[in-house]
Image 1 (tube, rainbow, N blue to C red):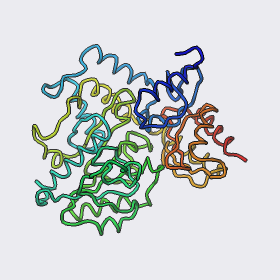
Image 2: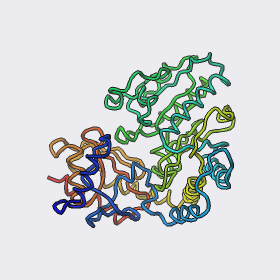
Image 3: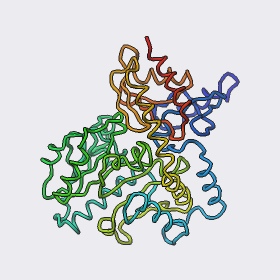
Image 4: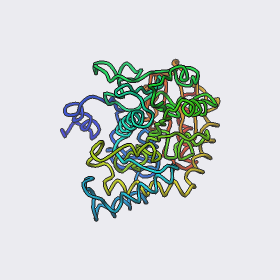
Length: 402
């Protein structure tokens, strides 16, 4: 670091020179965090209203998750799946019970969970439904976000996600999100699955019309098609329920989890389904060196236990009502969409772009991030206190007020 550089400028220079430019972060370089608070390299404190895109549902440095990780670090961190480990079975059993399914396929990242779910759905289609070989099709929703792998960007409707990455993987049919009749019309005898986010996160916390998820469930049941719910962002308590689907009384066939399942400690993801679906996999057909490693399972099990206790979910539902009430009628917003401690807010263009407002918020000690132009996502750690939530929303309201 040169004598003329601040710590922030030094870190940003290193990123510009040596890191691929696949992100455009705010000019904030974080060094420490606890709960809903983070501290940058220059000692400034911020309230975190993004929570790692829901990976940090339990906050920074949750004491129970940190203790679980520390204890396991002293014992065993990795075996590969060539051998068993004493954490894998209990983790799978506890997660399956929490979600209400039979089996768990442990992976690492959310994108891996999606890819794995797609493979399972295709194999189920061939072996159980009887779709002719290599003819399986999956229905997906416009505006959805399921990662950035080649297969996923093949059906993305975001030009930035697709541009320059073809040729694309075939076998996907895109329908408008929230339109059950369009989905019904897209089903063919070769359709094996419908892949949806119960609430579209990257699109700006887009909540579907009332009854939509229930209609998707009915269509999938009637047509013998798997309902695959991508709960990577919406699950693990974000909406005040273990799964966002549960808030609608809907049970998907396959649940994809990630982000918060690792407690913000390390990447942990999973495909969760009943035996008649996940049972189609046999040894050698799918795998992961790190998937189901003992360290991940130790942390994941503690995440499951925290959620199973229920108090954090109740806290989230209560503060979700506070969040919705504060945002309702707040000046400078053209639209508000919220569920639990999760909201997408559209900024009046006269005030600034989403990026500009997020930069102003950072200067005022509140961190969030824009997505798709005028929209900001608000997703504080679920452990945030009510006074701290009000504090952050006070800053937002002040910045948006004329």
